Length: 328
Ligand code: TYD
Image (tube, rainbow, N blue to C red; front, top):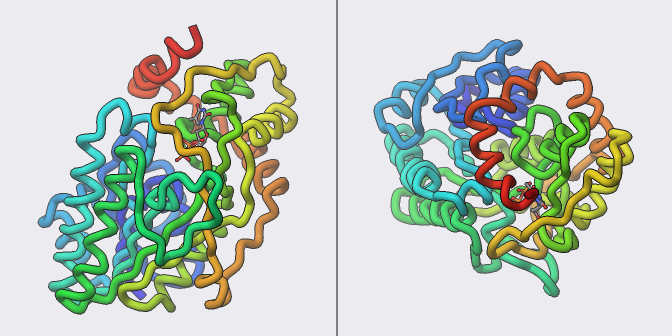
């Protein structure tokens, strides 16, 4: 199959591109190369890169030409950045998704919208989210994702396009931009910098290795039904303090680097996914969390040349805005 992967230079997107290439698919990437979309994430693989924005219909048409499927990873993804300012989130997530669906409407390509468990909102004291649950997003980021997702069933119903949604849980692994919990804490620990735990750190996320997330999306690409949503959860709920403790152990860092700081406003206490629908198709996560986290720490230890250049310029400006006061 010839597949257009939008956001293919990002964290999960670049792993997905590699997976499709290994499976023999022909892959083209459309990526805006924002701060977290990194050309070097794909420098060793054989696929064509079109530099452009999913909200630009002309760039989308050019990139999608001849493709039988589009898988959309392109998004502004970081909750803390969305709290500092969310304009780009609405443009990319809402408007960009609509532009992609217009293209799909015109060409008949299959479409997969890669979304997140965060659209279900805070599940503290409740069970696990099912695909039929309502969306109740609580951050500007998750609102933008939920809004983008809403186009999908509407385009299926109105125009008969062949489109599905995946909703993945917190993903970790190599090449994740060091603003998210795991890569931020791992790289800070390796550098002897503080690990800023928000609030009491008892918030729960359901952790999923990036390769397991990608096999889930691939299942949906090949076997998913139009108009359907598929949860892709790790089934592996952990408190942030536990993740932090493991990272301190694995890096050999000084436990005194762990600092409890002012909480994220509106911070969701718990995410949890019921993935039985996708499991019924034959998918299951294979990577045990302890092994996956240890391998991820080893990757960051061995690949300083990937993340050290990132921790300069724009990153330092963001880091100062997000953490300077918290760590003062
Ligand atoms: P994050 O990686 O930003 O993912 P998300 O908010 O999309 O789940 O955060 C994961 C959890 O870690 C979340 O509960 C917030 C917490 N966290 C911290 O405690 N400190 C930090 O510096 C960051 C980035 C996250």
